[in-house]
Length: 269
Image (cartoon, rainbow, N blue to C red):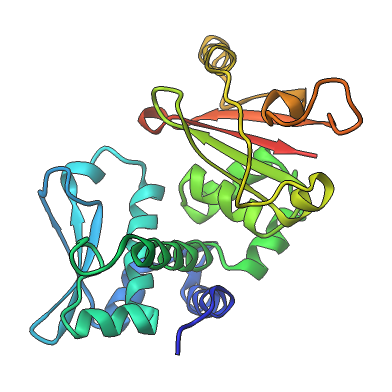
């Protein structure tokens, strides 16, 4: 039987809470407890990490060529993602049956997307157990400042911590990510955001003004800030909302750089 995303989140939270020490989940101890060996190697641009099954044993392979320059939070998310493939029954059984989770020949694109979504969901809830995250964020500023504090506590990436915040529906919020060339990458709303705007997760009409974003990024650099924030109407980012109409609600816009991975705008209403 396939595990739902809710089941996966609960499983990950239970495991994460059992290995949580001073707010940081010990991924190495989790792997060791399951007899999984973590191996580092040089594999070019082919993958960040992989879970493989060989001679009746599981191994997590980390690609030093892509991860050596990454912050520890991204490396940890990669390990947690591969642990997700192990702990999710369907993924583990596929590997045991000789079906690769990485190669297109073994899985159709739609199925691969579901597999990766499930592993990402597991990773976020493993690294940032939901009940603990909610307890911590209520003591902090429930926007980017609080998120950055939790990022440091959990030793997670900025991107995964922001996305976890949005997924937990703590506020009416929308995360928008762009690539290093300022091209649109993805957007993801909280449930509260869809309720107040009527904009669904499946069809978010995002408008990214590259010059606007570039100027914001330049201000972050010039002022030496971690991020920059301002009050911004939703029409700035949503193309179907007309300016100065009742639907053009104003929210808090917080923009942060992700280095070579582009940047993120977190909108909170």
